[in-house]
Structure formats: structure tokens, C-alpha cells
Length: 187
Image (tube, rainbow, N blue to C red; front, side, top):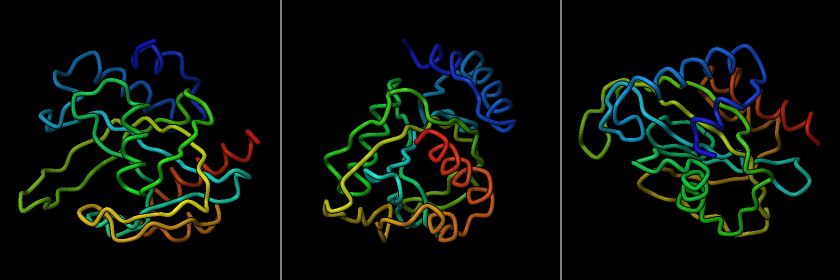
């Protein structure tokens, strides 16, 4: 099943997801290069919520651009298999190699605003990330490594602490709290 069908079949968890699902599908239908950063208005991204075996902790990175603790993820960069993108990003950003999908299904979806910023000496205009999130499990004993060009820390946090450590209010209240709540309802 391709990503468009996966999104169409996804049952939104809350009002934010209901609205964002409609928006993501509209962008997918209307926009060119939606899986590429060449689309300067909006493009597809994949994120990962990586928890330990007993679902009591989540691994997060200290994101250099956003100056905050955050989930892992990144741009599709032409890849339409966003599940694969999420796995690749976890490995690159955390050093974790033994990542187990809790499910291959979409765990959440969201449209994320990205403020203009400098990356690699170049200004990147404000734009939207049309994001699909997947749920993974990893061993909290596995060695974590920093990817210095993207993050300056990688740590496991308790679920509540994962919300507290983020400095991005919208992510704390709307995304990370939602992911933790969904996680607690599943297990």
C-alpha cells in the first residue's frame, strides 16, 4: 500500500490529526515535488517515537537548529517509503542500530510549521513539514551517539520528562503529549 493509501486509511486520533490528515492529502494531490525539499512551501517528512521495551522511556535528541530536545526524523528527499525514512533517521541521529517497529502502521500525523533558519550557511525560508510518525522500540542499553551536524545530545527520558525537556511549546502540548497518551492507551 502506498503512502497516500496509508494516510487515507489512517484513523485520526484527535481533532488536530483530523484537520492535518485533510491538509496532507490535499498537498499530496495538488503539489509537485512534495517528497522533495525542492518544494519550498511544503514537503513530506517522517519522524520516529522510539520507546524502550516496557514503554516507560523515549529516546530524544537535542536538535541544534531548534535548540530543543525533540524526536528524531527527517526529510523524505525523494523517498516515498516514509517508514524507511524514519528508520534511517533514527540510525543516523542516535546511533541506534537495533530498531524494532512496534507496527508498520502510521502512529500519528501532523503538519508542522518550520520557521526560517540558517542551515549549512544558507537561509531556509519558513515552510511546512507534512509529517508521518512511526512507533519503534529500541534497547535502552544500546550505545547512543551524537550526529554533530544535527544534534548535540541523545538521551533516554521518562515519558513525562520527554515533554518537560522540550522547549517548543506547541510540540510539548500538541505532539509529544499526544504521542505519550496514544502510547499509554495502546499498552
